[in-house]
Length: 253
Image 1 (cartoon, rainbow, N blue to C red):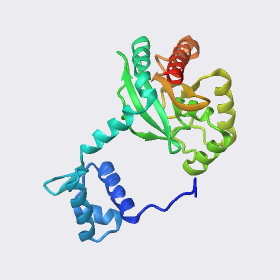
Image 2 (image 1 turned 120 degrees about the vertical axis):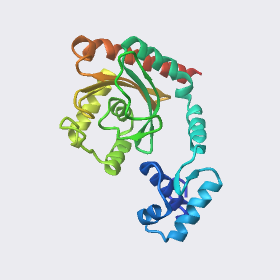
Image 3 (image 1 turned 90 degrees about the vertical axis):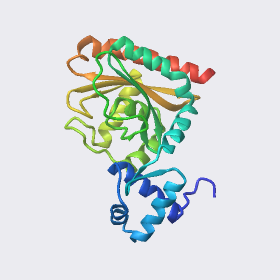
Image 4 (image 1 turned 60 degrees about the vertical axis):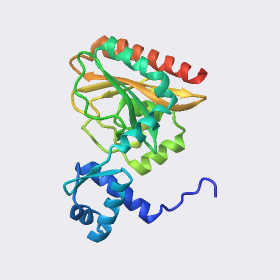
């Protein structure tokens, strides 16, 4: 049936659960994997050996790690995204103009994925790496994406992912989030004012194509540098302009 959810093959699910554990742990042995996934050691060994054989894991003296084949696949997936193909130049320009961290995010499975990031001269160290899946409700890019989604899709995301508090400023109530998304829709950009990390501010704007949001562009930095007119007018204007240029290019390329 079209649109119906299918049950994943048990063996396929187990293989990817092992890969995910290797990623999170930074490497693990057969016993660690068996204990983590409640598998017999012999079964865990078969999975790990198979992953190694096809290039998705490497064995470093008994410690299995994620193989570099995933890097090739990830880069291929990223390069096929039209927003990436046309948007990197604008992200680079934003980083140069503001001196801060400029980012490109896309929505996927109810979360945000960082597709590209560029550090300006004064930019803070980056914690969220390319390809990382993150919550939408506590980030400027994420809220910008949410503001452009249909209401039923937003409700589904909230139901599945929740509104987890990252700081005391994080929006954790539905009504408050709806009011915020309405405000974002009217002004054309979203703000993260310490909702993810204390002392960090971010401004993000959505990028749409044919009425459907395909991503968001943002600039982030410390409160000490992003304040006053720079926070309220200068950076929002730059971010909205960059998102608009990317949107036009995506729509007509």
